[in-house]
Length: 304
Ligand code: ADP
Ligand code: MG
Image (cartoon, rainbow, N blue to C red; front, side, top):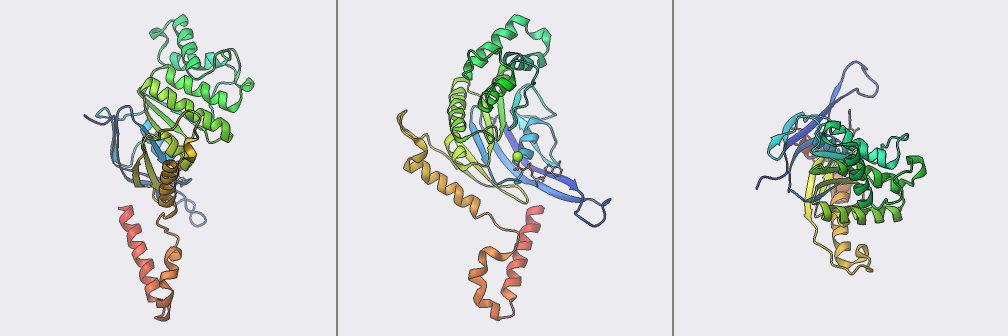
């Protein structure tokens, strides 16, 4: 079966102005390099990586908000040509209309589909259904400023789901929430995913969040953003009152990903291996220079 989403050699470069120097000249900055990835239909995939490694760039590409500099992205075997109603995005910032109630915000997603496709009362009923799915029964008439951060994000999720996209793309949606609210929204999102069978690509810089949510976790490295490793995460069995996040298995996966992110190949210089190199410094630091050069070679290879 073809994967729901396929990324083939996806590279994204930006033209940037160098700091100082000639302001009119531009340099090419590689934000993502040679990303190859298949996302299965109905999968919950998490992408984790440090800030600046290209996670949002990757999500923007999937959403069709930008195009790859090289490579291709296919959804259901078809190239992505811009945004589509088959994909919904939830951002870190709630992006709700302040002048619309929770229900009217959710209805907006349906209006975007084209008013001809649904009647007003259908939209109202559908909005109600999805607000109830995200646990907001009784809050339909509230305006965003009357809702907590967690509730606003629930509205944003309901709005994304209401027009029934196949794919839900989430870019650090819970990063601005307090720890307790974040955990309850993580539980909710898993419940919604099981209930709806959507394909989910969830971006985070939080390792715990990645292990808790993902069926697979893609670990990224930065400069340029590349896939370091893809880890299969098992279903952690725990009774409802057990804390999954403290379980032995959970901690093991958490640690594995933490190590992968920590051991990120440094391009800042040979800091990581200085200990091992110290004896050879006697020979005029030649080994140190070789180490630098081999890292430069890696960099050159990475940019190709
Ligand atoms: P993340 O979401 O992982 O924090 P981003 O995808 O936002 O990272 O950014 C990855 C890198 O690409 C960063 O170094 C960022 O400065 C750079 N970048 C992102 N968008 C642009 C752009 N439009 N122009 C130039 N550089 C960009
Ligand atoms: Mg980001």
